[in-house]
Length: 410
Image (cartoon, rainbow, N blue to C red; front, side, top):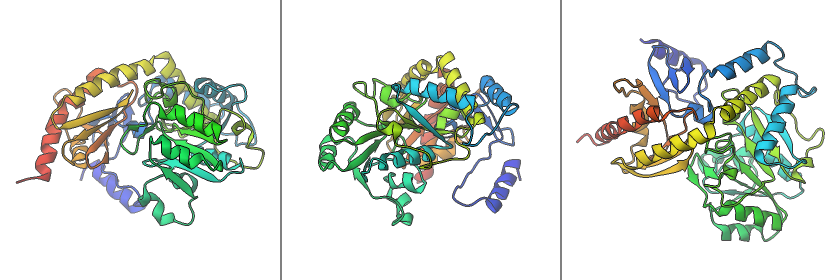
């Protein structure tokens, strides 16, 4: 039995069966990770869009180690310098005015819970979300997540949310007519649906309509924020949103900490920025100095190494190359946020085979993700090079052929 097999057997004995991992990862460097048996993988998912600057980036390691040696935790009873600096930086990147405020939590779901609670403090209680949305698994965030299989076991405890067809402005106008809507929540690109962007004019129109009807606009950037699309936030990416908008609420997490758990709810406008008052929400770990130091280091690396432009250039070229492959019917995405659709519904099989692939001079395997039977998603570190991307492109035809053969052995 290999070391990986031993660890997996132990995992199944002690960890709840919510998750079914087939691999154990022991260490990472840059865009690569290794298992306990020394097998190297090109990580094309970065922990579900988290390790944006790669694994063990020296600046990130240095910042976390330094902060750990000074002050790791304070609780919300006390302020700390990294927290203040990070909040100011995020408000700047988000395009907030002087009224902007930040709430820090520990995850995307926590950030979304804070945004939802903020919206409900307006005194209105109708909430709008979009078909195909994913906003988390805690009860409040789950109520905004469209997939029925996630919500059904908890019926009666999740909130009452109206789901609208994604991109349908007529449906949005109809839903807003009664003027009792607290908030519209949307993702500029629906990642869990398969990296599906909203039509370019939709977000700007949603901003206009929500303002006209006295509703808040909340943009969930948990997956798309912090450089994933080649811009700090997807709603500030002109390739995705046709004209500048300022949402009332923006949520971020995943890439923000570069691998350290942190979430943020940005309240960019009034009244959203002043709805939270003492006692209405709380957190023990949120905004801790260690997490905020990791986030500041992550933002610094993205900025100083020009990773927004790098992600756009490498991602655009990669999508062009993928679109030319036989067996691929369409490719979509921005920056290093990509999905492609296969001619045959063998995406899960490709994921499994990719982890076992071997290319001369390349990695032993590739870590990718299926968002459906025929759709594969790629969300690598923003540092991924064109040469690294090309090793996957070169391996994909063989992976597709093997998956199809496995599915149809006759």
